Length: 483
Image 1 (cartoon, rainbow, N blue to C red):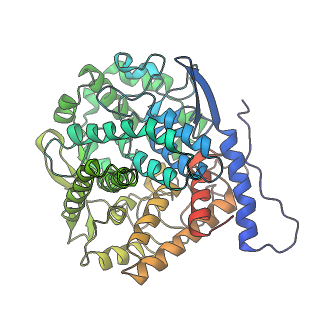
Image 2 (cartoon, rainbow, N blue to C red):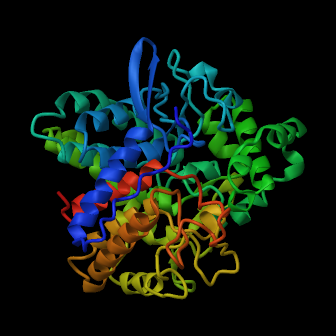
Image 3 (cartoon, helix red, strand yellow):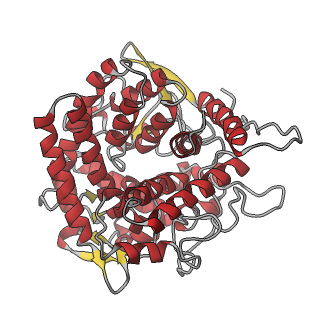
């Protein structure tokens, strides 16, 4: 494999190009990037086609990355989109969990490696996974892929993956909402998809570093790789990683028993981003079931979506004008008030009330907070915790932009402002990616993928990243009708 691959830039003949011509040219580049990140492996005597996020470092299959990739691939290569989702559900545990990482064999660059999870008893033959999950984008992707498939092409695919998706939703409801209140509990920052967000700073204080085993800290010191392959000042801190891996060690000690984990974990949060996706995911699953004539089964998921919509609306904090995560670790119930882009995800869920909507849009459209030149920053620009280059503490991420765009468009029929902002965010996200190529994240103030103009500046995250390529395809096809 070529680890020094560079994304080809669109050709520039010097002649003026129409917007559509530029989009079409960039779509070819996106296709090229996704082909580069294809990873074919044979496990249990079956061949799987997976898309890794980046062959520079992320050389396995990630849950919500893969779901986003499938939504891009369906516009270019339907069979590969089906295979992407087949591979994603291939390592599902008996209890229904679909893990955040499905490991490719023989790859050691990424830390933690498969053996660090101690999940051997849950493996599917040769298929090994981590022990936690990620935001439930899967059923949204399945529904999107099915709707955009060529006529008659997706029947076998849906028969294969739909039972796994339903089992996964049942897992999330049983183990992550044991109170049956509608909001889901995450037990590890990695489950949020926004690993080192300021949202988790207060919850981290409950993870005493002295309680993290010495062997775990020594392992992190000796074997962590992301801060060496990338620039350390862009990555989560070493203390973050002690806590990340301390939680993994605790969960392994508890035998990956999620009734015990949810009750005992020092990190347990009702996550508004995760829960917003949960509401939308249940709608998508219900829609898929209805589309194939299984309306009785769809009813349950519709009810779950409605329950979560109502619960999300009640996380609104009027004083701070935002939706709040709730720290529920070990019996606590404390709102987490941090100005991050997660506060806008209830738009996606349809949970924003008529009274809350203008307040949400006012906050989002503020150029001093969340609407700079290239929105939406992962942390508000005027927050004391904003960091331009550090992962989820400042940069703009195409994946969350996509979700916010979908949320704004959901409210477009009743709000001209929501429609205008959604259209503008589509254009700014496409422009940001087109100018730079496919990076993990970008400077929200300039739209650049490098934190400075010096030649040796490290880019924002790893290059030739899959989900910016897939998201570019989806936005161009769905909103700009590029053909």
